[in-house]
Image 1 (cartoon, helix red, strand yellow):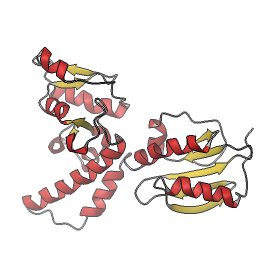
Image 2 (cartoon, rainbow, N blue to C red; image 1 turned 90 degrees about the horizontal axis):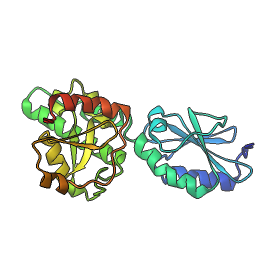
Image 3 (tube, rainbow, N blue to C red; image 1 turned 60 degrees about the vertical axis):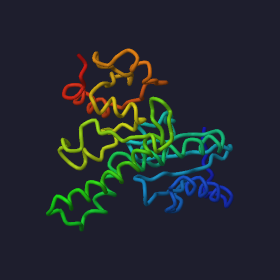
Length: 252
């Protein structure tokens, strides 16, 4: 049985502020019923933090996309938001918070909102002007993509940004809207070698995130394309990959 500390003590408020502020949620909205609410200028949604009188800590979220992709199951706890999580130790809460922010800063349309704000007053009458806007969009999107994939290639674990490439599953020029272009599920963050293979239609992925190789790709090349674990795709990733397999991948 969870009994919230309400109102929160000075020490609890300080701890909640530190958890939120150190993880990108720096706008405080006060406390209601033992839950302190925070939001961010760079990520979508709100978080709530609370302290159990027995010593545990609680987190509530209202961002459906974040909740859906967190590798952490919600607990049957009453409170604000769409899902609540209980932690026996403060360190466990700290361990989860970076991923909460990374997802909130990239899902589902945070890069799109940022991009629209940056280009709303820019001219688009010439090809040069449209290229400027495209470069802005790609820069904004790369930042969001690095957040989503935690700054590393999900296949190889390579984290040197100089060796990482953002590759659209449905190419930028073929997307039907900015929302599709700036959807993090439409882009993979791959090391340069995997990016080159993906760009040429030599590899794709099955529904479990395991690589599929074109029959035209030699065995030596397949061996050199080392990978550690399958990519944890969402259903949205799989929708985009189905398009890629049908139109781009040279499987036969």
